Length: 135
Image 1: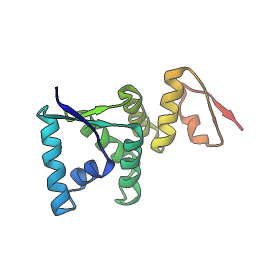
Image 2: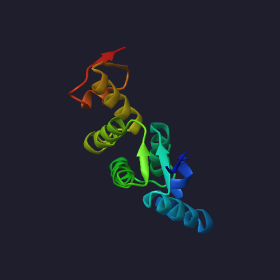
Image 3: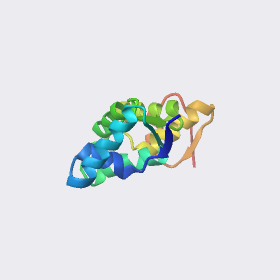
């Protein structure tokens, strides 16, 4: 049974951006080990959110492109997602509605739990499968 590790956002950012000579090489090697089944890299929604916001803010990648990149990369054998359906749903919601990951994750959670969302943010109204309680 392979060892399991919680993956920090900086690993995937160095892998995606290939912008650090040493860390990018180490990230590629670590992810290759995970793809080969030697280790398991677990990824939480918090980590996905951190990567999403870093891609958007620091690297000026638009929301849809960031979500698309994350959806593609995280859908490989290298990664095991906490809440895979919810994270995948949230990334799809970013792609379709062009909202931030936090709003999309909140909507995915509400949809998955058959609850509404209390929010001042009208971006939530872009999701027809949930109801926003206007505060």
